[in-house]
Structures are given as C-alpha cells and as structure tokens.
Image (cartoon, rainbow, N blue to C red; front, side, top):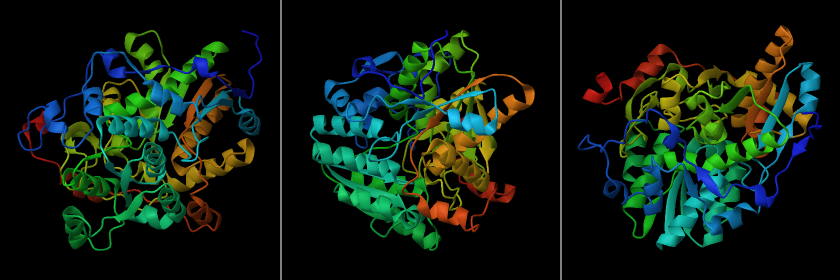
Length: 460
C-alpha cells in the first residue's frame, strides 16, 4: 500500500469498538480457576460477590463469549477521550537511524494520564448500576487511583484509596489529584486496618507494596455496608475492558495496511499489556499471525523472568482467592523503584498462561536504562513518558537498534500507557544522578517464595 502514513492515525467515534474482546474465548488452554483460600476448590460466583460487583464477577468468569457489549453509558464516557491516537515515532526512528518503523498507542491523553480510565469507568458504572454507594481500591504509581477517582466523581460514588506508602511520598501530586476528585487517600500500610497494623508490626519501616494495599482495601470493602472492592489490573475483567486499546490499534493499522512484527508492552499486573495484545494474540493462537510479543518488567520485580508459576494470593495479607500465576510470592517486598505501577509480586493469570504456553516473551530491564530511554523519547517525540511506559520504550529502542544492525525493516508497536508529569521526583533523581539500580538476589527471592502455600496444586 502506497498511502502515506500520517504522524497520528485517528479513528472516528463511529469506528470506536462497541464491544470488548474476551481473549479467553479463543485460548485453546484456559488458565486455571481461582481457588477458594479456605477450601482450595474453584471459586463460585457466590464466593466472589462479597468483594466484587456482580456484573464484574460475571465478566471475570466468562470464558465463552468472544465479545461483550460495552454499555452505551460507558461508550458515552469513553468518547470524552477516546479513540486515542496511534502515533508514528518518526523523530525517534530518525535519531536511531533505524530501518524499523515504530508506532505507539498513546493512552495518556486524559486527566488521569493513563490507560487505567478504560476499566475505571466500567467498574464505577457497574457499581452505580448495582446501587452501591462506596468503593475501595489500591494504587501504586497513582494512575489507577487517579482514574477511579475521576470515574467515581462522575457517578457520585464515595471512594477510599490505599496508596502504596513509598509512592505517596514520591508522587504527592497524584495524591492531590485524587483528593481533588473527592477520594480519601491513605498511605499503605496504615493503622486504619487490622492487616495494615499487622504488616507495620512485622516491618515498621516498609515502604509498602501493591499486595499490602490490596489487603487493606479488601478488608474495608468486606466490613463496610454497600461497598465493594475494585482492582485496576491482574484480573480477567480488567484485561477485558483494556481490550479496547488493542482493538483500536488493529483498526487503525488495518486502515493503512500496517502489520506489526513486534508488539511490546510494560508488565506489572498485566492489564495494559493484555489489552494491547488481545486482538493480535488471537491470530497467534490460531496460527495465522507470527507477531513477536514482548512483556517488559523491572529487574527489581521480575515476576515473569524469575518467578514461579504456581497458585498464590493476590495480596500480602492472604485474603484473596488463590490465582495460578507467575509470582515472586505474596510476601515479596519490592524495592522502592520509581515505576510504582510495576511493583507487584504477581502477574495476570491470562498473561501468565500465555507466557507459560510460549505465546509471548518476557524481558527485565534496569531502572537507569529505562530512564535513558525515557529521556530519549521525551526529547524526540515531545511527550514525557511514565516510568512504566518507559520500560516498553527501552525494549522498543533495543529492537529498533537490532534492526539497524541487521538491516531488517520491522514494524514495532509499543504501548505508551501514560504520561510522566506526576513522576518528576523520579526524573529529578535521574537528572541528579542519584538514581540507583536494584536487582534482587536469590536470597531475596527465596524470602518471597517462602510465603507460597504448600498445596498439591503447587507440586504438579
């Protein structure tokens, strides 16, 4: 096709998907079911109702329907910031002097600054439909908390956010944004919950983790009337909502006859990666697509590249159902690196299963190299990327330079999950050369693995 590819490819509102794509329906091998933490048998919907909205439970357990209609009320909200642009990184390509073509899906063009709003509005909408009056959640870097604060304000729902303590210290303006939208933000672990007090008693100086914050949020949800817990990543229904990213990418690329050879996304819990790759993964599963897919995680929290594929709790307090996933153990305490959204001990069951079955690759990268890539991207493309997104940018640059070395022309698609304008503490550390790299030792990992349950499913 000779049609010139513009810098930004926009879709019209009419071209925006009207349904989410449920990748599990096309997976030849489904991931293992949630296990009830007390009975060690597959969870029923009734087991999950005290924690999650009923419609979200239905979506979580749906493995049959390929497409799930997006309600009109959610589509109307989406139209405030979607469709998001697919951008050709011409200036980055020129700087790298590479034959590769680099595209990024820019999900930071909303006030929350990230892709998280795609699921936040859906979860708040269903909570409102169910008649709930309050929600609880956790947040790491603050992107999910910001997005959910916006959605809850729109639908008139009270929100309590447990923000990882070190992130709340590193990103005070994220906290201010959430409070501007009416959320009650509490640094985690805190003394407001039983599990928080227990964690602080065992480790008084901890900077916290997403696992800690999840435990606190769930405790509040199940002990508060007319309240439920909502999660911004990991779970299947969150990846379902994020599939709008990949669907828009595919529609935009098809308009110009573009086929990606490599798709790259950062991976913490797996929501943006799962959403980006979903429609392309369908082709890999049925054998019609040979696109390479690379999940990129921080070397400081390497759940895919150094974790174990076993059943584990999703939280530090061991209150969630058990999920079969790549994990460092729910007791693993990640270092205080600046990519707070990737500071989670486990990985989405969908992503974990696809990785274990060989459908995608995983790579870990160190923090200073990530910020080297972020600075290069900012100076060429004019957008300051979030630390999380910069992991994908780092590997995209590596792949583009490999194309330069081999002379191969490849098309690279990366997920630009959000902007870094609330991450200036991290950029200050990089600019002042006080940023450090941390890679956990085998002994560090063993401390996390020691928290894994000794159950028959983990011995298979």
